[in-house]
Length: 621
Image 1 (cartoon, rainbow, N blue to C red):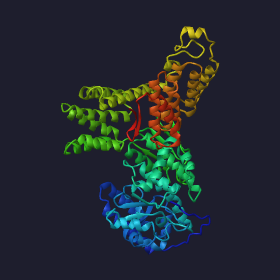
Image 2 (cartoon, rainbow, N blue to C red):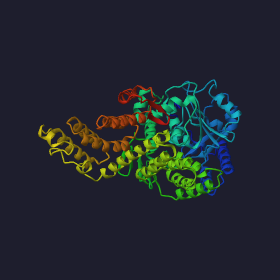
Image 3 (tube, rainbow, N blue to C red):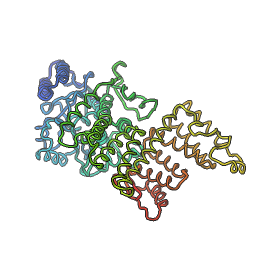
Image 4 (cartoon, one colour):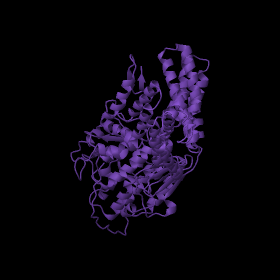
């Protein structure tokens, strides 16, 4: 999306009398709310917004109204009769209704957000070539219930804006992320172009929906969003040449994308993620605190904090002229989870077949892992005593769910039972048995990493590694080796001391602390202490997962260092396999950045072994 601006802002006309066209817009909008929103809490919201809008007498009063945010939506009949996208105009108010931001007024049943290219400055689609395919889809029955449409050119003041129009435009621009999330989303891209607004609109939709966007013309944007998990937002934006006409929009969009990236990793629940984004995607809000997660977000400083950890993002602008008491949102702990679980259990009981399993999978896709866990446990109860295959499937769903919640010890017990049943049912050499044992090994590894991570914050490194400080005989070298070689501990001692200072002053979860830990691990390996180095890398890996994410290039570098350090060829091969599997979540198999790890892994394959990469992961057969 491209939004033209001008530095010259005409003075707003002053009008003391009422504006009949605006008053008609207000009454038409209120009537539309009452016909589509009937629940009790929405009824209260309708009364509040009706009172506020009726207190405004002119369009300029509305445009400069600071207490609430409202969106212009074009009516369906106006959208269908136009030959090209119409430019927003105060003379076309009969073509619109106003919808308040929040409270479910803008929703995917009634409202459609249209993402599109601007083919030329000042007019995005002069010939209507992008509009016509959308209108044809509506004629074919798509979005049959949709009655309101939002297009940037049509629903935001453009070009030479008056002061009230510019004030509304600036405020509305900061809340576009919520508009994308709340509406049905469609797009018209005749060809791929690296436009930053389009990338953001795709991200705002994709990161708050359970199912991916599947149309081919969206594939480049989806691929670049995946790539951001490995390289970060700014690197991907620069690498692929993303641009926007108004350079001042660039940092705003990058900040939004960085927030989405962090939240998509830290907050698996789509409902919770949307609640947080709904709170901060308001031009009047500076900070937000989610009580249940212990998560705080500060748009001014560009910081997200949770449970002693901190993640940064490019600061996002907000209205500075509001009272400090009004710029903070607190999201309290609610009882939604209990209500949702009761509702899902009831629906699963009444389902025709395998209800608990199907509803569990649906909730897991939405990131509601606790609800899904309860449903998977009920499914397992129902399958006990039936065929071993059904029990194995139920155990697999439960184990996968527990792993997503980082309950690795409990997941390990479930995986062990699953592997035993698989071997009894199919024999030791069956592919299902081998796969179940592979999954058990991975879960056991994650349990070991989690154990290191739990004691990382409070224990000194000597206890974590079960060894003395450098300068004393090492537990991983024999007496003969110690006697035959001078002790090369000077550099390790300095690195150890530097690491301890970082951990004490910056905290155990700071990026500089992790860098110091990695430097120390590399020094141990170079100087001939492989066991200590391996243990340090095993500490660094879950810390890197936490700080940067499991697919980030820096985390993959930790895996590469670990693979070069571990004592056996089988361990090294498995570590390279995991590195490639993680990397393929963000880039394609033929991407140049995968060459090194593929080469390392292929070099370690035994005769008769082959490498298989698919959507299910990377396997050595």
